[in-house]
Image (cartoon, rainbow, N blue to C red; front, top):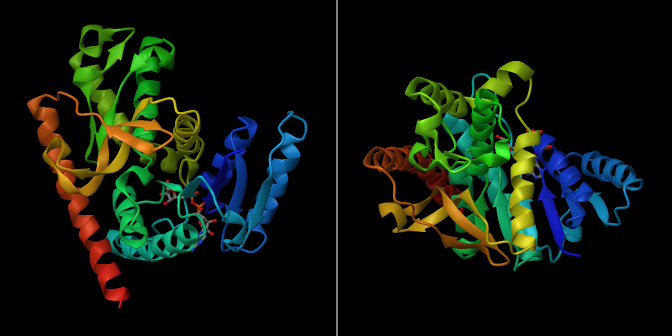
Length: 314
Ligand code: APR
């Protein structure tokens, strides 16, 4: 049985663990700094699966010993932005946490594939790369799948169709500058522009960009976790089952889409090897420019993370 270690047993981590378990995908290790939390979540999930015919090893721990030889490390550890905290403060705090997590877990699992969830996503992937030195196929950020699931949901609601009949891709950064690729969005093979008006498409794009905030506003405390966990599970399933499906994920570019030395959301083929191939879509000029703008925003945040690492690595 393959093995996944999830670092950070909060909302996204525990929901990812539960989904992984009920899909019988992999043995699971949950790690968190809060004493009792990963152990409690692991036990609860183990008990939940007892009646579901699932037979996995599911444990929780406050140390990394149990994570040894994991095939996939999912990083959700971090803190959310709190009132009075600047974006820059958040980048530095989460850089410190993710660097520590990446170092400890990569030592125990030198062949693992990292799936990063902690925000600001693209920069946190960069931190994992800097700290572990792993090749780019083995560091993948989850964001675009979540944004794409949201866009599919909104289109499906408008048209009263199954979300499974919709092809869509949301690329770029995981934030206000994300880039929904309308030119490649199809419903049962028909271009979205033939099925929905420009105004409605514009509304859907806006709602997708605000998808995370919409949930935060409704929940009042905390942020989304079911859809993020579902997105992670789509990735782990594609990797373990070697499906070669193409999903929008944050990966390190080395010239693709005219960009290099940053992580950004692009279509990626997932298989046993991780991010096996970056698929270069033929984008419209507008989409291409939007992707470049998105990259500028990521670079600014990445610089903060990079400087923080440089200051603290001596
Ligand atoms: N090592 C291990 N776990 C840690 C560490 C650390 N150094 N620092 C924090 N954690 C744990 C916290 O104790 C908490 O249980 O990470 C967990 C984060 O969980 P939540 O606060 O519930 O956050 P969640 O909603 O799961 O989101 C996690 O995903 O989508 C992103 O923006 C989101 O960055 C956030 C991440």
